[in-house]
Structures are given as structure tokens and as C-alpha cells.
Length: 139
Image 1 (cartoon, rainbow, N blue to C red):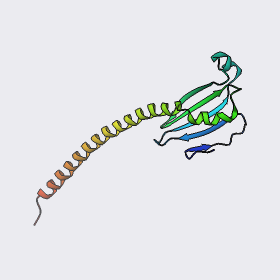
Image 2: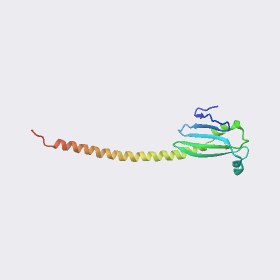
Image 3: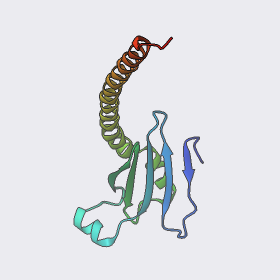
């Protein structure tokens, strides 16, 4: 069942589940689910009911989480497991919030600099008008 903030892609292969989940706070997570390769299952000792999830930050307010399911993990439970998993959302919030704070600080600095230029420009215009008005006129 589709949720209001979820978009499903139509992949070219049956083994991949892919959708993006938009959260109410404006952050989005692209979620991809697939069977873990036998090497991954052995290396990380993934049990039948376990999943390995890897998340990376993509860009402003967006992250990507890849779910590597044990091959025996029930197919019917995979989408709901991915939908309920919050790791990608938490990463997007932590990095996205820091970037938003940096953008806000940069915006404040630029507004202060530009307002200073505006005051200087106004003073120059007033000085030019006063000089023009004080010039001698020919009668």
C-alpha cells in the first residue's frame, strides 16, 4: 500500500525495491532494498531475520539508504521494514540542519554587508544632490 509521502519507481528488475519517502519536516530519503550478496552475508554474519542498512547523504535535505536483506528475509515484509526504518531520515536531519544553519549565517553576513553598501550609496547620492544644489547658477 502506498503512503501519501511515498513514490515508487518502476525498476527494470524484480530483485530491487526502490522508492523515496518524504517526511513532514521537508527531508527525503531514497530507499533501495535488495538481497545481500553471499559474501556480505558471510562477512557480517547476517542472520535470516536481519538486514544491513547503509546510508549516505545525497544533497540538501536528501539521503539514500540501501537495505541489504538476508536472502531468506520474507519478501512481503521488506517494504514495510524499509518504510519504518529511520536511519536515513536521521542522517538527513543531522547534516541538513547543520547546512541550513550555515546557510542562515552566510545570509545574515551578506545582508549586513549589503546593508552597509546601501548606507554608503545613500550617503554618496545625498552628497551629490547637495553639491549639485550648491553649484552656482548663471542668471
